[in-house]
Amino acid sequence: MSRFLSANDLNNPGSSLADMSRALLQQQYANWPMLQKGADTLKTVVSKEITFDGFRMSIQFNPGRIVSSAAKVDKKSIAERKCFLCLENLPPEQKGVETGDYTVLCNPFPIFPEHFTIPHKRHIDQRISGAFPDMLQLTKEMGSRYSLFYNGPKCGASAPDHLHFQAGDFGFMGIDNTWPDLVKNHGIWLSENVLTRIASVDDGLRRFIVINSSSHTESVQAFNTLFNSFSAFNEDPEEEPMVNVLTSYRQNRWTTIVFLRKKHRPNQFFLDGDAQILFSPASVDFGGVCITPLERDFDRLNADLLTDMFTQLSADKAVLMAVSDSLQS
Image (cartoon, rainbow, N blue to C red; front, side, top):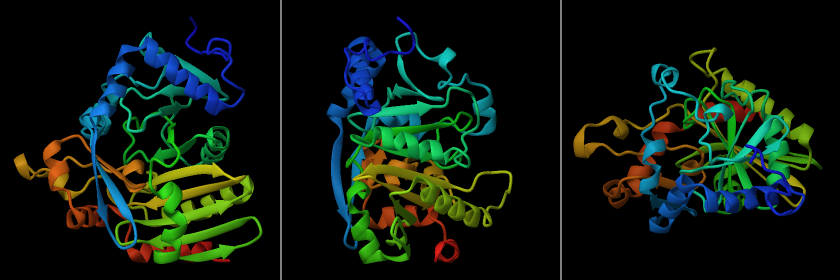
């Protein structure tokens, strides 16, 4: 069987990429033991909720995520391993669905019930600049079932050397549905026209921009303005500014949420012994589902600890204000 599966291979699941992806997941679960093992760990996940000012964050104990949470992403470690997103390095059992320059693959270490990785077919650096239009198009194609997300090379990407997005069940992350309330209670609308609305939000944990638009072109323009403004605060102009990006497509509108970051991991991650908290937040955590692979960390995570850690990682208020100013009409 080819590496790429067609609609016929998947028993004609439907014409949409979302339908093809779901059928791929079912095929891979039946034929790829590594995915079966990873997916089965979701049956043991334990959750709790922590309430903040008008919103909630879910905490999950998911031991299957230890590989990603503790991943070494320094240049030396990356250079010494084979890229696990390059097609020639995939396990023989792993199959995918082609879509333009990208391939939809099932994630063998899932967070979502239906979790996909969507790498570029070429081994190019993880950079959202220039790839955001692709992300919007993929989101439209997947939007009947899934949200997409992008982790920057220095804020959550376990393969910072290979451009990729991820997708998972829409609504799994609380912010998929609650962003309008977060704007209402903790943000301001910066710009509104017939096609596009842009908001700035500081909810006490996270600082982010929301672009809600029926226009692909205006979404890209707003994102580029945001990205260029935020880049001015980057200490190393050669590095990508630290962002996590969520996108969804509902009722013929894209919603793009861009979390502005200043740090990869909180101080607690680097402490010794029992003092360490193995918490390495990326898009899903910022989206409202905080994943920890250790039960001891799950037990002790509370509102104060989360506030402290997210505050360490999020851009300063002054930076959010500057980026917001660039987006005001």
